[in-house]
Image 1: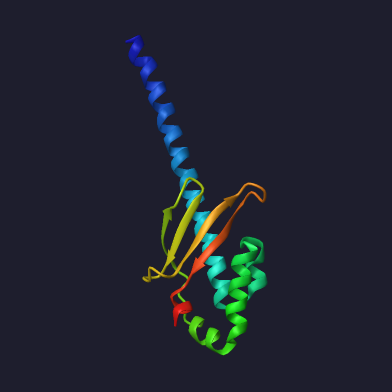
Image 2 (image 1 turned 90 degrees about the horizontal axis):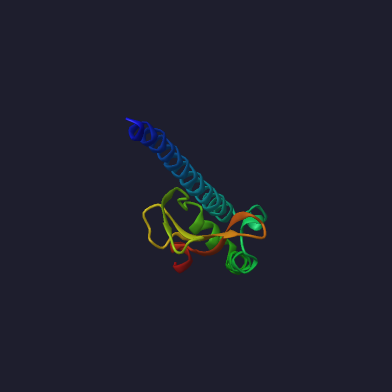
Length: 131
């Protein structure tokens, strides 16, 4: 009987820990989706300053260069860009790939910055870039 009494609190403790871990994982997933969607919406609206704090400089500079090379074409192609997050997959322990809509080409790569203590965009790819 004593062994059973010791096992019950231990199993309750394990259940509580698993619940916290799952909650933390969904919070991380939510943060990744939020950063990816914020970036996509900024790119769609060509509001590059809105994406500055969450994007690596070289990635954003490339996006601005694409925009400035042909603003009319960029605006036309990106006006209907779907920024709904479809899936998040792990690239490594601290990096993720987020896909938008149904296109495999519409994606961003999101990583964790130890220095800034936030998620940031370190790469992007949009089907519209190839049109």
